[in-house]
Length: 168
Image (cartoon, rainbow, N blue to C red; front, side):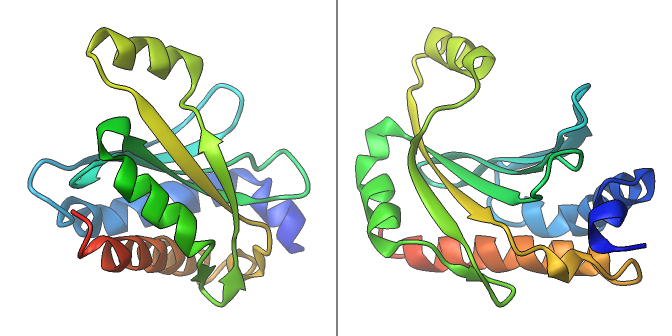
Protein backbone atom coordinates (compact mmCIF):
# COMPACT_ATOMS: atom_id res chain seq x y z
CA UNK A 1 0.00 0.00 0.00
CA UNK A 2 1.49 3.38 -0.96
CA UNK A 3 1.71 6.33 1.47
CA UNK A 4 -1.36 8.08 0.01
CA UNK A 5 -3.59 5.01 0.43
CA UNK A 6 -2.14 4.21 3.86
CA UNK A 7 -2.83 7.74 5.21
CA UNK A 8 -6.42 7.51 3.94
CA UNK A 9 -7.00 4.11 5.61
CA UNK A 10 -8.83 3.34 8.88
CA UNK A 11 -5.60 1.70 10.06
CA UNK A 12 -3.84 5.06 9.85
CA UNK A 13 -6.52 6.66 12.04
CA UNK A 14 -5.96 3.92 14.62
CA UNK A 15 -2.20 4.49 14.38
CA UNK A 16 -2.69 8.25 14.93
CA UNK A 17 -4.81 7.62 18.04
CA UNK A 18 -2.42 4.99 19.41
CA UNK A 19 0.56 7.27 18.85
CA UNK A 20 -1.16 10.10 20.69
CA UNK A 21 -2.04 7.80 23.58
CA UNK A 22 1.63 6.72 23.75
CA UNK A 23 2.82 10.35 23.73
CA UNK A 24 0.21 11.81 26.08
CA UNK A 25 2.50 11.73 29.13
CA UNK A 26 5.08 13.77 27.21
CA UNK A 27 2.43 16.34 26.30
CA UNK A 28 1.15 16.50 29.88
CA UNK A 29 4.70 17.00 31.20
CA UNK A 30 4.96 20.31 29.33
CA UNK A 31 3.44 22.27 32.24
CA UNK A 32 1.26 21.91 35.33
CA UNK A 33 -2.08 22.95 33.84
CA UNK A 34 -1.82 21.34 30.41
CA UNK A 35 -4.55 19.10 29.03
CA UNK A 36 -4.47 17.03 25.89
CA UNK A 37 -6.88 15.06 23.74
CA UNK A 38 -7.25 13.56 20.30
CA UNK A 39 -10.34 13.07 18.16
CA UNK A 40 -11.64 12.36 14.72
CA UNK A 41 -14.28 14.80 13.53
CA UNK A 42 -17.30 13.79 11.46
CA UNK A 43 -15.51 15.22 8.43
CA UNK A 44 -12.71 12.72 9.00
CA UNK A 45 -10.23 15.39 10.13
CA UNK A 46 -7.84 14.11 12.81
CA UNK A 47 -7.00 16.45 15.68
CA UNK A 48 -4.59 16.33 18.56
CA UNK A 49 -5.09 19.26 20.94
CA UNK A 50 -2.77 20.37 23.71
CA UNK A 51 -4.17 23.17 25.86
CA UNK A 52 -1.96 25.55 27.89
CA UNK A 53 1.38 23.88 27.11
CA UNK A 54 3.39 26.99 27.95
CA UNK A 55 2.92 30.42 29.48
CA UNK A 56 1.10 32.64 26.95
CA UNK A 57 0.30 29.80 24.58
CA UNK A 58 -3.35 28.85 24.80
CA UNK A 59 -3.49 25.93 22.41
CA UNK A 60 -1.40 23.72 20.17
CA UNK A 61 -3.19 21.65 17.57
CA UNK A 62 -1.90 19.01 15.23
CA UNK A 63 -4.32 18.12 12.50
CA UNK A 64 -4.64 16.33 9.20
CA UNK A 65 -7.43 15.53 6.77
CA UNK A 66 -6.53 12.05 5.47
CA UNK A 67 -9.15 12.19 2.70
CA UNK A 68 -7.72 15.41 1.18
CA UNK A 69 -4.80 15.39 -1.19
CA UNK A 70 -2.17 16.54 -1.27
CA UNK A 71 -1.74 15.44 2.32
CA UNK A 72 -0.33 17.84 4.88
CA UNK A 73 0.21 17.83 8.61
CA UNK A 74 -0.69 21.14 10.26
CA UNK A 75 0.93 22.22 13.51
CA UNK A 76 -0.94 25.23 14.88
CA UNK A 77 -0.05 27.51 17.77
CA UNK A 78 -2.54 29.98 19.24
CA UNK A 79 -1.15 32.68 21.50
CA UNK A 80 -3.20 34.76 23.90
CA UNK A 81 -3.11 38.28 22.40
CA UNK A 82 -2.06 39.62 25.81
CA UNK A 83 1.26 37.91 24.98
CA UNK A 84 1.81 39.51 21.58
CA UNK A 85 5.58 39.40 22.09
CA UNK A 86 5.47 35.57 21.99
CA UNK A 87 3.58 35.65 18.70
CA UNK A 88 5.98 38.24 17.25
CA UNK A 89 8.99 36.21 18.36
CA UNK A 90 7.66 32.99 16.80
CA UNK A 91 6.81 34.79 13.58
CA UNK A 92 10.33 36.23 13.40
CA UNK A 93 11.81 32.72 13.67
CA UNK A 94 10.13 31.49 10.50
CA UNK A 95 9.31 27.83 10.00
CA UNK A 96 11.23 25.02 11.67
CA UNK A 97 12.57 21.85 10.17
CA UNK A 98 10.58 18.95 11.65
CA UNK A 99 11.86 15.38 11.39
CA UNK A 100 14.16 16.48 8.59
CA UNK A 101 11.33 18.15 6.65
CA UNK A 102 10.96 21.90 6.20
CA UNK A 103 7.63 23.32 7.37
CA UNK A 104 5.87 26.32 5.86
CA UNK A 105 4.57 29.04 8.20
CA UNK A 106 1.28 30.92 7.82
CA UNK A 107 0.56 33.94 10.03
CA UNK A 108 -2.61 35.41 11.54
CA UNK A 109 -4.50 32.14 11.90
CA UNK A 110 -7.84 32.50 13.68
CA UNK A 111 -9.37 29.71 15.74
CA UNK A 112 -12.45 27.96 14.40
CA UNK A 113 -15.57 30.18 14.65
CA UNK A 114 -17.10 27.98 17.36
CA UNK A 115 -13.92 28.33 19.43
CA UNK A 116 -13.81 32.09 18.89
CA UNK A 117 -17.30 32.59 20.31
CA UNK A 118 -16.53 30.40 23.34
CA UNK A 119 -13.25 32.21 23.95
CA UNK A 120 -14.81 35.64 23.49
CA UNK A 121 -17.33 34.83 26.26
CA UNK A 122 -14.36 34.20 28.57
CA UNK A 123 -12.57 37.37 27.46
CA UNK A 124 -9.84 35.54 25.56
CA UNK A 125 -8.60 36.66 22.17
CA UNK A 126 -6.12 34.51 20.26
CA UNK A 127 -3.80 34.98 17.33
CA UNK A 128 -2.12 32.03 15.72
CA UNK A 129 0.52 30.64 13.46
CA UNK A 130 0.21 27.45 11.50
CA UNK A 131 3.07 25.38 10.26
CA UNK A 132 2.36 23.11 7.32
CA UNK A 133 4.39 19.99 6.72
CA UNK A 134 3.60 18.66 3.26
CA UNK A 135 6.30 16.00 2.98
CA UNK A 136 4.74 13.15 4.94
CA UNK A 137 7.05 10.42 3.72
CA UNK A 138 8.04 9.86 7.37
CA UNK A 139 4.50 8.51 7.95
CA UNK A 140 4.62 6.11 5.01
CA UNK A 141 6.08 3.08 6.78
CA UNK A 142 3.23 1.35 8.62
CA UNK A 143 5.59 -0.29 11.09
CA UNK A 144 6.98 2.99 12.42
CA UNK A 145 4.39 5.61 11.39
CA UNK A 146 3.12 6.05 14.95
CA UNK A 147 6.62 6.49 16.37
CA UNK A 148 7.50 8.90 13.56
CA UNK A 149 4.34 10.94 14.21
CA UNK A 150 5.18 11.22 17.92
CA UNK A 151 8.78 12.10 17.11
CA UNK A 152 7.79 14.84 14.64
CA UNK A 153 5.27 16.39 17.03
CA UNK A 154 7.69 16.28 19.96
CA UNK A 155 10.42 17.78 17.74
CA UNK A 156 8.03 20.64 17.02
CA UNK A 157 7.16 21.13 20.71
CA UNK A 158 10.85 21.02 21.66
CA UNK A 159 11.66 23.62 18.99
CA UNK A 160 8.77 25.79 20.13
CA UNK A 161 9.52 25.70 23.83
CA UNK A 162 13.30 26.02 23.42
CA UNK A 163 12.69 29.18 21.38
CA UNK A 164 10.36 30.59 24.03
CA UNK A 165 12.62 29.90 27.00
CA UNK A 166 13.60 33.55 27.33
CA UNK A 167 10.22 34.98 26.24
CA UNK A 168 7.87 33.65 28.92
